[in-house]
Structures are given as structure tokens and as C-alpha cells.
Amino acid sequence: MAPRDREKVLREMDRVHITTMRQGNELVVTTDYPRHRAFPWISPLSVVPNFDLEYRIKVPRSARLIVRHDDGEVHVDDITGNVDVKARQGLIALRLVSDKPLAIDAKSDYGSVNSDFAGGESRHPWPFGHQFVENISAASQRLHLRIVYGDVVILKAHEPQAPPPVQ
Image (cartoon, rainbow, N blue to C red; front, side):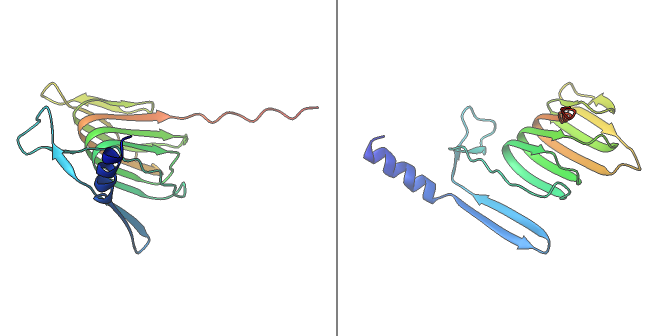
């Protein structure tokens, strides 16, 4: 990379601010970053980031997870606590190991919802949206998933069985 290009990238990176704050027993992660006009234009006021940013946040399996996300992907692996994710555009993907009953309320306004778990699927009256609901009152885990533009995928992950002892 040319020195001039490197300086430009470093200036852009200096404009990205990530803050973490603890509020009671919650951790709040906030990102402020530069945006530019979207092309092709979704709307005249659309702005998008000019870079990729990836977080890998590890929490206890039983943690309650609340995510508010703008654009991009949200992946959640092996959480047994309640999960509440809202995103504007991208993908919400959950990989769950639990065999316990789940209460699932997942909806995409312009996209699809796919689940390995039992539940009722429905299409919106208009041809774009999709909803998946399974209301189990005794469920130990509740999933509330919403995305405007994009898909929701809920996968049942299988943990490999331990081999029998060698004799």
C-alpha cells in the first residue's frame, strides 16, 4: 500500500469510535463510524459504512442477549438464555444446541425465516415478508428476532457424542 493510501486509511480508522459501558449487569457496546452515500441509492438519505467491522463477544451460555444492529450480520452460537435481536439489514443467524422447547417469534419484512425447530410459518399479505412463530408457554428459552431487509436462520446444532471407552 502506498504511504499516501495508508495515511488515508489511518485517518478513516481514527474516525471509528467503539465504546463499552456497563449498566448494572448489562454490557453496552456502541460504535460510531463515518458513513457515505449508498450506491446504488436505496433512498436519497441512505448512508452506509465504508469498511467492515467484526465483533466477537463471548458471554456466558445462560446470558440474556439483546442486540440492536443496523447493517450486516449477527451470528449467535450456543446461547441458552433469552435472545432479542433487531436489525435493519443483513442476516440474523442462530446456532443452538438445546433440545428444550423454544418460544420463537421471528420475522423478516423483506426476506425469509428458516428454522430447524418446530413452529408455524406464514407469509405476509404482500409477497416479501415471512414470519415464524412457536409459542410454548413452558419454554425455557425465548427468541425474539426481527429484521427489515434480510433473512433469519435458526439452526439446531448437534454436538458430537463422546466415543465409548476403549476396552
